[in-house]
Image (cartoon, rainbow, N blue to C red):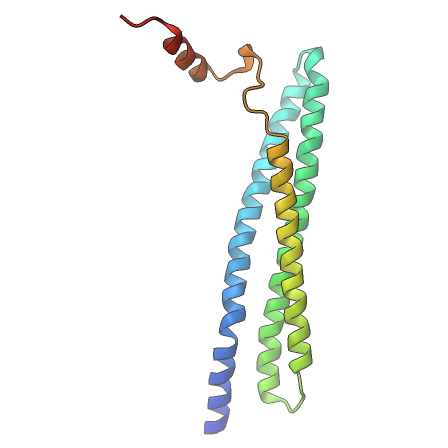
Length: 166
């Protein structure tokens, strides 16, 4: 291997470091998104089980909750798909960088296009994630539980607080 080829490979590795770091960030984002999706699915399964054994008056509320979870799951799935698309495009950028090193073709427009598409895909994924978070906080009902639905530990703390001290 000629010294110029080694230098070209070294330069290509240096240039590909930025996309590799972006790829690492996207991988971390995928971990966050898949964990959120797993929690949504677990919550939906719990609500479905409750729906099967629910009193007649609770059915509509549980179905509404399932609808909210379904919307959140769709957004999270879309965010995952966009982030996977971003990761694939970034990987393609790295491959084309190395192909360009050893070919006589001008691949700069291809590299730029792939990188722009990868960033746009990441933006779409982040927007889906933002929307899912907005839905999650919109549907959050803190303090709206019936007393019989409250967590027993919370009732115990309330009971202890309400008792007169000596």
